[in-house]
Amino acid sequence: MQRLFFLLLLVSSNLGFAQLITGEDIAVAQTESGPVRGYLSDGIYTYKGIPYAQAGRFEAPRKPEPWTTVRSSLSWGPVAPLLTPTTSVADELEFVFDHDWGYPNEDCLRLNVWTPGLNDGKKRPVMFWIHGGGFTAGSSQELPSYHGENLARRGDVVVVSINHRLNILGFLDLSAYGEKYQTSANNSIVDMRVALEWVRDNIERFGGDPDNVTIFGQSGGGAKVNTLMAMPSARGLFHRAVNQSGAFRSGILEQSTTRAIAAAVVEDLGLTPATIDEIQNVPFDTLAAAGSRALARVQEQLWAAGAPTHAFGLSWGPSVDGNVLLYQMYAPEALALSDDVPLLIGTAKNEFMPSIRLGMSGASAVEIDAYLTTQYGDRAEAYRAAVREAYPHDTRPTDLIDVDMMFRPGAVHQANLKSARPRGAPVYMYLFSWQSPILDGKYKALHCMEIPFVFDNIDRSRQMTGGGAEAHALAAQISQAWINFARTGDPNTQGLPEWEPYTEENGTTMMLDTRSVVRHHPDRALLNFINSAR
Image 1 (cartoon, rainbow, N blue to C red):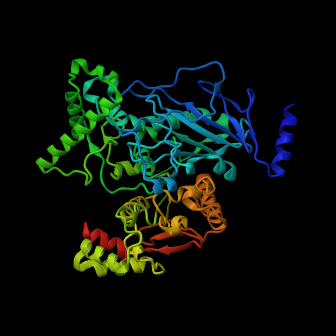
Image 2: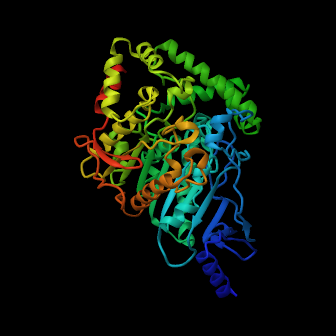
């Protein structure tokens, strides 16, 4: 019967028919906690919502309670609760992103697996995806581009994605209130480490190699990649890293600040050190509101004291707690922890475009010039010259203001630091400049635009990419580059120019576009302009 099943699968695949195969005995795999049942989609074994850990509120994660019967794993698991639930969207922008918000539950420590084979003796590279949304929002199912089936098929790799605790649930520092809360300042990051430990202990059963794991993420997910790279207890759980639009030059919080925030939350809720455990039963909405007030209160205190703070105010995120994270992200001691980890890093050309944010998509050259004069005064012409030097083929007036300078400087800064490490692993730099045709090209190379290309999900994300042969061809190159990097630590692939490692001296940057080219220091004048304006 099994032979007939695979024969039918082979025949149907050759005929080009899509195959979804389910059943009580289909795609059953073992984990340390118990058996799970997924499904086969065009030959890729798919599992969703597998528990990798469990945790009491503000407590460290621990292994899930084991089960003996086969656990159905066909649907996405719960997502971390949001501070502000989505009750309305901007119609056009929502069309482009096409979110799947999922259902919230604090018991959200779940992961998903896509693999071409089970227990077949192969040791496939593992690509461990960490979602964006800063440290406060998002999930492994949020965007259609996150789906791992096509990437697993194209590269003969195992793709894993995770949900983990976010916002106040992942970062409220109650470490001053007892041993059970000692990791609470960074539980969100500990969740990720425990998910990587699940990969180490279980992924061979899913055809993966625990000794060849690549962590990759975008935006907040890229920042989480950086955090794991600076986490002593995560060392050895991954072997390569990809940071997509997630490098920032600002530091993370120190314990003095996180404990002040926690004290403000505890006071706001009317609790004391003696009654602190009652915080575990406070309704989430009440807890989130108290957290928002505490962040604002401590922010005001820091401003009043003249203390340096983040430009956008305090928010939930990782901190130097002396337990989970010992150093600032770019401290030499933190960089040393990942000296042997090759890094692929880059950004999208346009990211968070002012023309969209300010309603200036159709702005004329005169309107753009007026905007630049307001922004830069008598230095506006120097700015224009720097942009035109970086992107000499741009023609739309809005192209002058839509060049990203939020993520790009951080990516270059991180690449400079890591590539300068003595005996360090190589760094590869990219800049995704392909322009989406959606809505008359209004959204250009928007934040998140490269993700469908990385996952080879052009059709799943056609409301962002437009679909079409051009996008598919570029996706084949980009996804294969990411696969090759995961396999060997080198992204070079057929169809792209030779991609040499980045150094601060050579500035080698792969410009990913319909016709990709390598440039050296493509925007050095612009970066110098922005740095001088800080």
